Image (cartoon, rainbow, N blue to C red; front, top):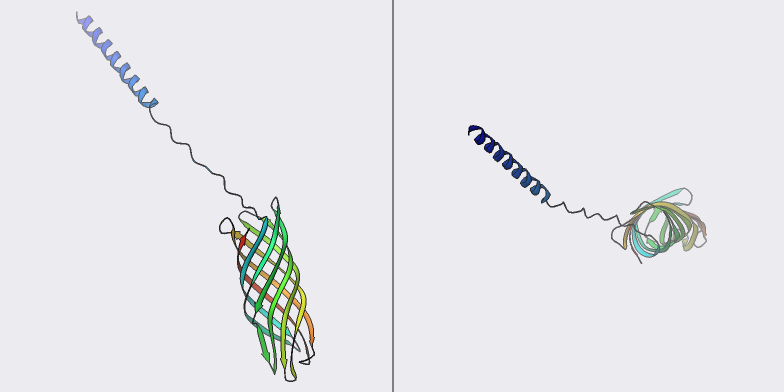
Length: 211
């Protein structure tokens, strides 16, 4: 009789453990799966197309008439152009028109830069979303000169070159920082009885819209 009771208890224990194991297995199977990660690939910006923008600039220049007459100041303007993108390479053309009140006065001589602008080529590398570029082309500037014998104004023609970085702020708004050196050549201002040229270094901060 004792053996029968021990055998029955052992069978009950085995049955209980088997039942608990089955319940644990069901609980594991019922654990919900983690939701799949919502991954979106970064949006690749495209620089192709037309654009317009405006700039504010700071200039450090000099009028080279009988010794350098240094002239520093602020300016501003508008720019526009067209880009073509081929892989990472971006190239196109750009023009700008600006106004600067930069002037220099010394020993009865006064020279002032006025309206100026350029037509340039532009070549860059797209690092998404930043475009690093170089630019170069022809540049022109209006200059007025006053001296003890009179005054005269003329348009100086020369060249400009520089480098810059531009980035997307939104899908169609860009911001840029650009450095340019411009040499506008030399002109004879007959009415003032002097010959002078003008050159400058400029840093330009711009905001544009891409179409």
